[in-house]
Length: 226
Image (spheres, rainbow, N blue to C red):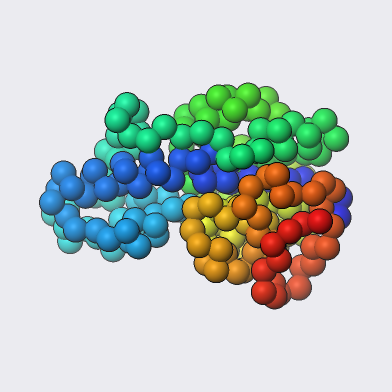
């Protein structure tokens, strides 16, 4: 298909921030002597912190999810946390799409400074025609609000859009919006992304233009876009 637009999540989809994010959340919990498992930490991926934290607030008396989320975001600048880098092939793929005249955008659960800073470091910020961040929607992923807002800003129908995501919450959000969904399988095991129409390991596996996508219910996930 030739899409009207291609939209990307950021964390774990364009930039490998998940090791850094997990380390920051683990630090927050350790500072409050609050227990958390690796599986519970993975559940934060792709979602806004203040929407995940309510399930853990019994460990944080006197604090609010918003306060704790802001505190955790402050740890991201600590030099001892893992440094994020681009997902393999992501900057090159974005530049290829832009050179081919494809309209591009980002829909993220991160804050605007976080998102724009990473896009600038990838040298693709100026290639994005729409950027939707956590502050701009009432309901975060897995709700479709962010993707619907991006489509509205771009003047496109979600059914003509391809979305790249890396988490179950993100895939659910894109599918709920009605978009074609390709999962980049780095953040969680591939079986957790089974609702995506296609699964790839990174952007070197994405053949452009995309072929074979259908808006029917996703069968067992494909492993290539060619």
